[in-house]
Length: 260
Image 1 (cartoon, rainbow, N blue to C red):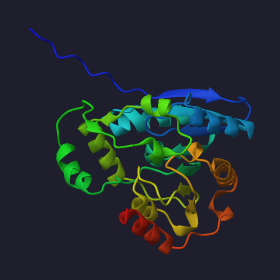
Image 2: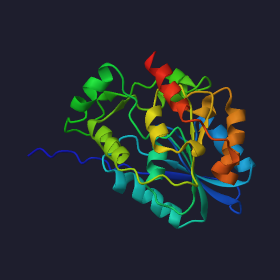
Image 3: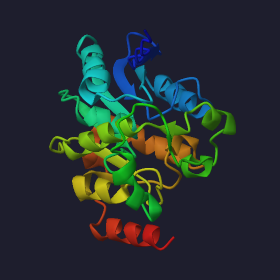
Image 4: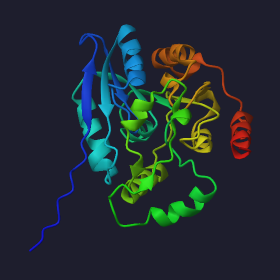
């Protein structure tokens, strides 16, 4: 008799950085990001230098149960510790949105919608229905989409495919996002090709949006020092520290993206 191999359960990994006496900051990383990646390490080092005890959450890259495998373990970790703020990036922003913690969130290019265009928009509904957890779908993410300073070795260290089950899970999580909270701040780049800019604009009030120049990972972009100073301000003071982004800004972004 042949036995089918058991699927390995995806696991969340957390590493701690900085002085244990500093303010606790939960940093939920994006898909495929690791604390050891140079660009991510740069951001963690800057945060610890500025007085944060960083709890860096590395997410599974091929899960299929959003609440059990992503949200619940991160929430359990946070409530057992002195977490004052949550910083999140991309897929981490989707997870952080569902945590329901009584703290301020600062989102960096959150993955609240699929960035689909052309053939991808037509194929996605078909591919996502395939009944498998095997990674067979190309991610379509290039190094240039992430940032000018992104190392090729870091991209190579990230899976280049995802599973249909993972895509279904993400889509469901995006469709069930809880209401936006007025104390949160969302950073976005107009030229993001990894996440859907329109979804960010539709969900976020203009007063809570902060645009930046660079790729999907601001911390791998040449203008990262300037953006980081704004991120610190957002963590400390919230949305009141920033002028509102005009509503037609998002419309302009969409126009520039669709023209490419």
